[in-house]
Length: 79
Image (tube, rainbow, N blue to C red; front, side, top):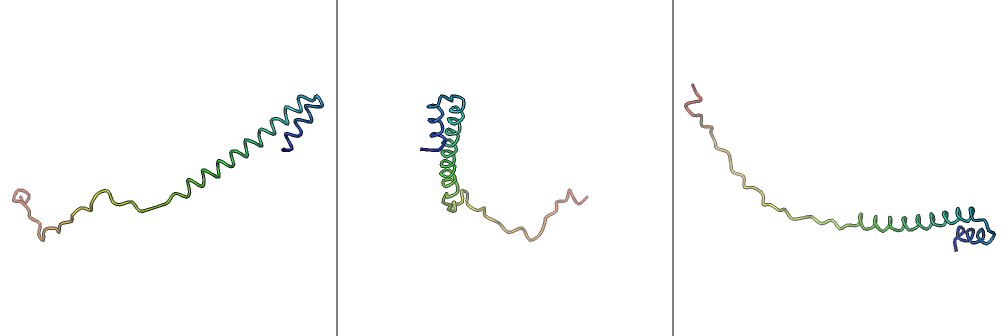
């Protein structure tokens, strides 16, 4: 039994309702913090341990053609 739960029970038995309420809140805080920490570790383990495999290319590489050896200039552009 946690220290906060024990304190809660002791204060209730002594009739100290306000102090028992604070002990109850502290016990809940500890329980929630512990559950969140467990979940955080679980989630971190899943997120950062994803196997990384190379994905195949979705499109084939384009075919490259060689450029023309000379540039043809039309007669309209010469004038």
